[in-house]
Amino acid sequence: MQGVGFRPFVHRLAVASRLGGTVRNGGVGVLIDVQGEPANLDAFCRSLTAELPTLASIERIGIQPAPPLAASGFEIAASERAVPLAGIPLLPPDVATCERCIGELFDLNNRRFGHPFISCTDCGPRFTIVLDAPYDRERTTMARFAMCAPCRSEYEDPADRRFHAEAIACPDCGPRLRLVRPGDKGGGSDTLEDLTGTQALSQAVEAIRRGAIVAVKALGGYQLACDATSERAVARLRARKRRVAKPFALMVRDLAMCESLCDVDSEHRAMLSSAERPIVLLARRAGALVADSLAPGQRTLGVMLPSTPLHHLLLAAAERPLVMTSGNRTDEPVAIDDATALDTLADITDVFLVHDRAIVARCDDSVMQH
Image (cartoon, rainbow, N blue to C red; front, side, top):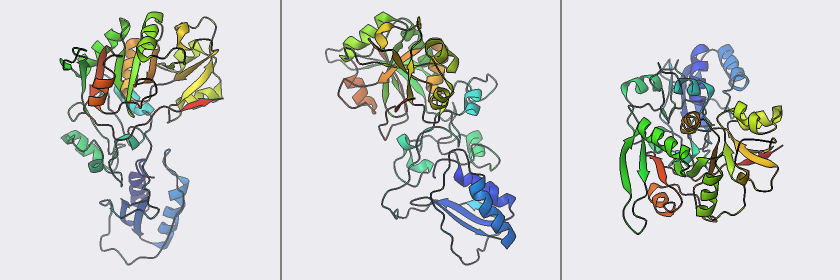
């Protein structure tokens, strides 16, 4: 239940029901202390299950009487660091970028325009950045990024959709992109290009357009990207990764691009657009403008939609489908830390698009078929 906007939801519901008390994260869920008129309490309990946020689910509810609270208002209290009753904390999953954040990402007048790490209570990183439970910013790899005044204001505003959004960020707060090129492969050090932010992104896209292979630091690990329409680029990736025939996954900008390449029905659209953003196996259209060597001898393509703001920016700028495959040598784990990636992927990739938010948990893309 943590990391899905549940505490802000409870706060709004309690205030609307004219109740006092607190809500806080606990070891295995959310703890609510609430007091008020019996009719208001009953209405609150009914609404708690009937009006859940999109990402939230309730496994069980335990209700017990408690002594009256001194405070009359309702607030989000500090999280409880108790040992989980079941021994396993409920860590929230990562969630693909929501439509409202995508709208802001491409809005020239929005202060988060072009920010590769935009998120809100409905989307963004969770599981892959959590250091410990309960899920609060100070126990994630976002802790190092101090909130600027506007972000702090949004975080503390009950009426804002980023109220207690733990991964809240903007261009002023960070994280930040940078471009790194592999150094001398005979043993020299990596050379950090003097390119960050939008310049790093644009140069990475230009590299892809020229047929280069780019290692992208994504949510749950590094990915290898190249132009999916270029036989030469795909062949280079196969040779360097020593992946002779196994199909590569394909990332497309949107459903329209997907439908130009594959046969897509309503159930496929639902799977592709789900919060998990899985790879979906789809029948390839005759004459689809992608390299035949993506999936040699196969009638299907593994296709996914962008799952992060960085992916959305890459696909929008590239204006073509991209191979997006795991950032590892064949049969090795996906790289999640920068040092390992720069070492193990240096002989595969031409350039690294990295950022300064650490990845805690490795997480690869799931695959679905209808």
